[in-house]
Image (cartoon, rainbow, N blue to C red; front, side, top):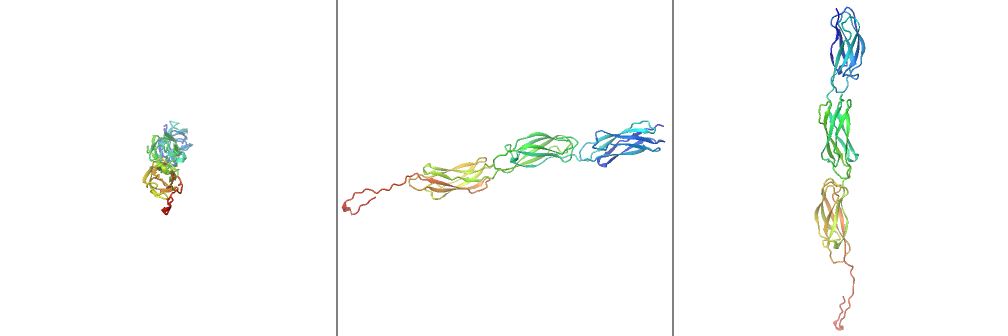
Length: 349
């Protein structure tokens, strides 16, 4: 009787360590059956199992032996993969001499989760480098479309970006660079969003999102009220209320005047509120001064401020207005007088 020899198909988890492949004949033989064994790659390659060349013998009277082929437990998510086990009968009595079988390796790694990292960057850095990652390597490229979306940070704070990034098979992360703007405006930390859309690959989620926080590198504004010198004939003193760097919010300052050597007969007591708009650095407050006819020395009064809204490092600035006199220095004279001797006295101015 001629014997038929065959392999069974084997399925093994990659974590099993070895695939035990039976080499069999369908009925016992009176002689040993000797088979040379070689493996051949398929969708599974040499990184998935150990290439094996060996010889097995089915003893006379038996019908099967097993050949062990090491399989590799990697950390890469991949589909089920196969390789071939080929035989060549070198001794014995079989009806076929070149049997072949298939080993299927099943994956034991979780499907990758894709994330876009949260990043904090100084506005002076020039770019934000945002990681786009998967938690375990994949056997295929992971392709992600990237778009940015404004938040408290707007298009004046960063460059709107639309791009595509690819995490190569076997890798877990790439970075996308997004330009950020170094302005001169004091502002709080601001954020924008980086959204992703997985267009190719094998991930358990397809729409990751991350946040970029831009930290400010501009000093907190210092508010000042300028010192001003004005001629009393000018009618008004124009007093600047300023901050040294622009702010992202309005700066609101209550203004009150206080007498000094100049009193209320020299200027008009003033109480008002001024606003330095966001992005600007200065406004003027007008205070009426009085043009009298009295010769007097230069006189001063104070302009006090109280910051009621905005972001400044000081809240109570003060400035001085000096009023210069426009009246001539008096000329003293003694009048000429004619008087009758009977008048008793001469009244001389």
